[in-house]
Image (cartoon, rainbow, N blue to C red; front, side, top):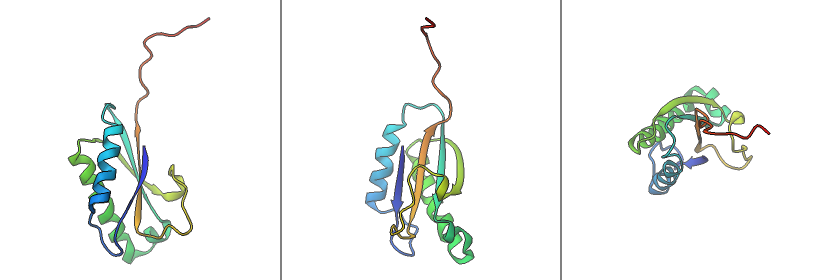
Length: 114
């Protein structure tokens, strides 16, 4: 599952819409034993020292809410161009992209080799 969490300008606080989005996403991966979590932000913000702290605070807020919902797994932080949702030119800087994916493929119980 991949989604974006939007923040008020200058804020790192999750609003109710953000929490609802995370809640919906966690239901989609609740049956997965192991997941990988990828968090991504606009590369210009990551490169800017003054904005990097806010990006980090936003990522921590999302990760904390995911953990509170019971989602555990390896966390990866990457450039937004590497994530599932394409970056939109007019999306603005106040979001973090999140991708949650199973880290292990399910075991095959049987197969047909013919």
